[in-house]
Length: 214
Image (cartoon, rainbow, N blue to C red; front, side):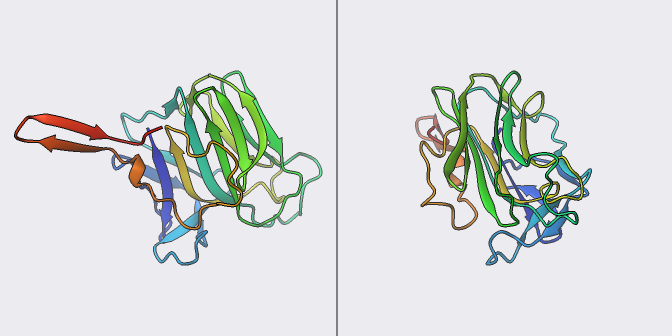
């Protein structure tokens, strides 16, 4: 099920694509939106033991073929600086496969993180549109079971433990076939192509469905 999580100014998460979503905020704080021109949105600051959950009864977050997961994120400054005990990583975890990248230069700036899988099962991790890691897997990407997206550092109080995120998008389909470091999004992504529509021709009884062409 396609999803796009954003935060309103009152730190209320909402799903721009899935109108049936029942999102609950458990301790996620608000921070400045990625796009300063936004008057209605903020970013979500994920700190220790904070999370957002979707209580939708018929929710499914399993992707068996091509998919894209992408979001803006940055690390607020940790009180103890940058950890030299454990790595800060960006990774996707599938049932029997982990594709991971160690972030060599940890900073507190916004970066654009993307994970894609194409029709040939090539999984690519990109930061700011540039490939940083890749692998091959046809395993289900099931966020309700045994798949995960990982960003950050396990050492609390260090830079990389808390994460500020904005415009979290997960869709069934491939948004980028190649690196796009010179063409990063310049605002919140237009989601029109991911919304499904029905066109009914009353005279003939025909019903046409439209959705993203992946």
